[in-house]
Image 1 (cartoon, rainbow over the protein chains, first blue to last red):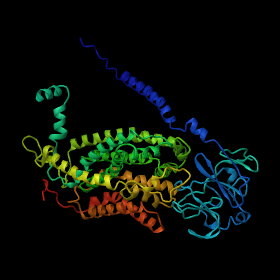
Image 2 (cartoon, rainbow over the protein chains, first blue to last red; image 1 turned 180 degrees about the horizontal axis):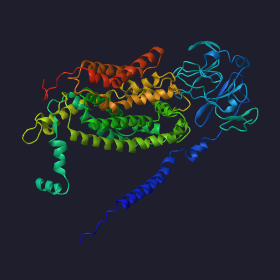
Image 3 (spheres, each protein chain N blue to C red; image 1 turned 120 degrees about the horizontal axis):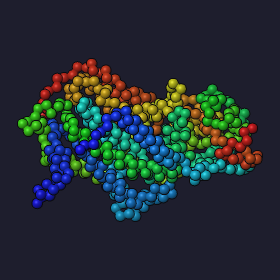
Image 4 (cartoon, chains in turn blue, purple; image 1 turned 90 degrees about the vertical axis):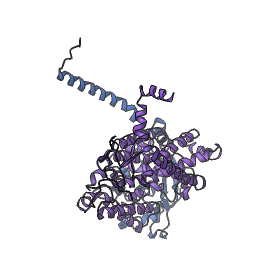
Length: 198
Length: 412
């Protein structure tokens, strides 16, 4: 004898709905480890720890490269002369007032630095990530006839001034980023932490 | 004996039926021409890539420290290792050359039109998977170009508004392109993407055998059948197509091994010279170019130099580049022409298809050289003409005057 199948469609619908809902929760739960495993691991996070640099021997006009999170960070001590001339090319810049937020709030000023005279810039071109080269000299250079010093990206020709502000009409959309940093003392620079935001 | 063995199988598995349906008795139109060889050659290249890939895997080391050295080990110390590697690099370029020919064939003869829309979509998915395979595979040798190509391409994700940076960190698994990134791209390249590719190719061929092959006249060969229900204008795949396919495979392999043995660098196009230097995250190569098969899309990326609607130029470039690859999938619904083949389509279809081919080649060239203001302007113009082929198609294909299509296929 055939067992009588109860047609009760309401019950079937409820059971299908309940099974689907529980199944969906299960899949969402199972997705957590798969998605999270893509995040930086504890080791990668530890390797992303702050970098410390001693800038006591950095002479005016010179630059050192500090590695932080595997990317080069340029630390430049500007000469008095170039600091005074920093606004000379103002009309050629795309974002002279640093309105795009690629710097911490304490670097949103004319020099784009926490301490006037010391620029801390991420040497990653905001176009496609190449490393711009440092050209401190003034006047005529290969790529510019009225160069005021700054950075030039050899990949696609983007130009930045000494404060890392991008020129208008080049492929890079934004100023060079300023990584979070603070000065532990006059000579010790810590890159990767904000310190006390004064 | 053989018959009894086959009967034993047939009672348990549709073996004979499957072989007949998909191989021996598959009806192929009699007017198929040389363009129809790209499909079978793609299957040959797929097999070459799987075999050489598995063999490379036996000696490759997927770590930032060891990857570059392990490639040198394969090239110098493993017996015939250099042949296996050159087979794989040549195969990658051959894969793209053939899939572009295969796609162009479909565009020429309207092979994407009803009832082959799904077949076209499946083929497009294999193309996208192939692009992903090409990119992930390119990173694995961990040379300078591997590293910086990964840097440039992945950084495009960072241009997505609002959550781009977080997404980028999630994809890299680190704050920079590192060994962690290499390892996940490796997992994609050797497991996930090949599995997906094989699965989609399988379904692509299933769909082909359901709707049947198109032909240069774009006529439906199923309209006229003989008494056994076999379309009149077709011939069985075995022995007719198998024979000329074997000949074509032979000719193809002559070209393939010539490059593999004598010109493995392909003049810097198959293997770029910058990649003979190990990856250095602090030093950018002077001139970053992608492999030749991506250069048309790279030119589009660089052509967008202006922000628009509050979106950055970089993000828009990314969108345009992605759209250049994605737009192929829309072809079945953009084409409003009553006829399939370019042979019977009107003058506008011929004009725009020619314009598309020219745009594709010019963009391909522009994407492989350094940009100057003049070249950027050229790239902008040809990006427009590239998209014009697709976006104007609903209009020109609908209103142009077509030639009458014959009932049966034409043999010239």
